[in-house]
Length: 150
Image (cartoon, rainbow, N blue to C red):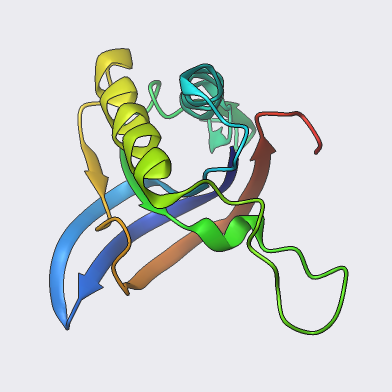
């Protein structure tokens, strides 16, 4: 699994011009699910994401996690994180999981965030064309991969 994590002041997802989810203060996480990903991959990423110390403490040092600040989480499925552009000019998405598998793992990670104790977990609409609006805080953007490629 791959994740692009952005620290945000607020973020929202719109489908057909209608707000379907929104948060204020926390993380926007774009999640890509690959063909070799499992529920263990989701467990690893979920735990890593909520424990990332990327929020500032009283001295201005990034030392606090999402849980420490009681932050909110907006998780959006994004298969294009597995786009391979090494050959040609059009990305290949052959590394992305099939939609039915990706959807199950996506729902699993959403549940996992709730089980971990994140008080507000919002999500995009799986496989929908979404508009994602956000106000970056920092900006702070972190990339994670469950295979630890980066």
